[in-house]
Length: 294
Image (cartoon, rainbow, N blue to C red; front, side, top):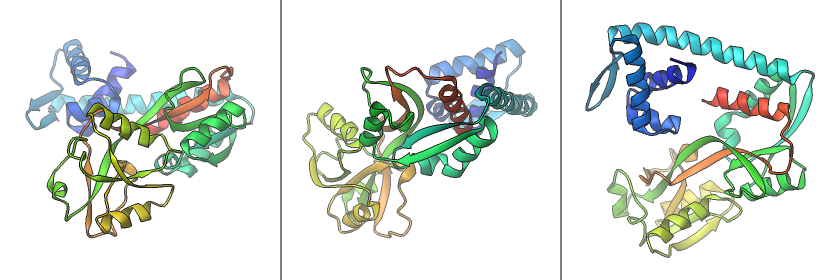
């Protein structure tokens, strides 16, 4: 067995569910099941009890989990130490972040990781998705952590994370009673979207086009999420946004419902200019963030 297989095993232990673990690892459930079965076959002993609700560790599985967790911690520390050694002397990176990415990754964590493990000083800029892209193309940013531009001619893209979309709905709307929604459920609703300087509206429109539906847009907004929530509170429409960035605790009249469509995601990664030579500092920084985020 190898480190990748051990990380798959730990993810199943953490989620207690093969389907959820596979989604978080960005692999199919079948591939994850094969990996777990392969580990058990090599050991000649069961690691999990399986049932319709998920999985639980066997007694040996508990012992194996402790050992595997310790190995992964040591391996991650080893990787970070190697990245720091490779980076050498202090250097600087100019990095753009699209809105929401710094909130999820943690600006303080990113700065500290870069400084402490690699000796890199960061110049951090927050721009909307398309402005991130234009600054990378112009060379004013070394790289950006932003939404996948799906533009292989101009950019090299390295995935980092995916987050599911949700619909923020007024409780008076009949669809608010559903546990999850599809775009078919939303075809007759007035929509509130963020504006087209972000990539996410393109994802939404593509899904409606696949349903043969022209969406009805009530409003397009920039950064003011509270205004979007206010519109939903007034029952003016349904706000489609990113689940992990949706915060409606102070609103009593609205709910957030997952959009249960596998491709309805906010996909974020590292973007660099296609014709730029990606130096070791950038590669090491990407690996550091990928390791830390996961």
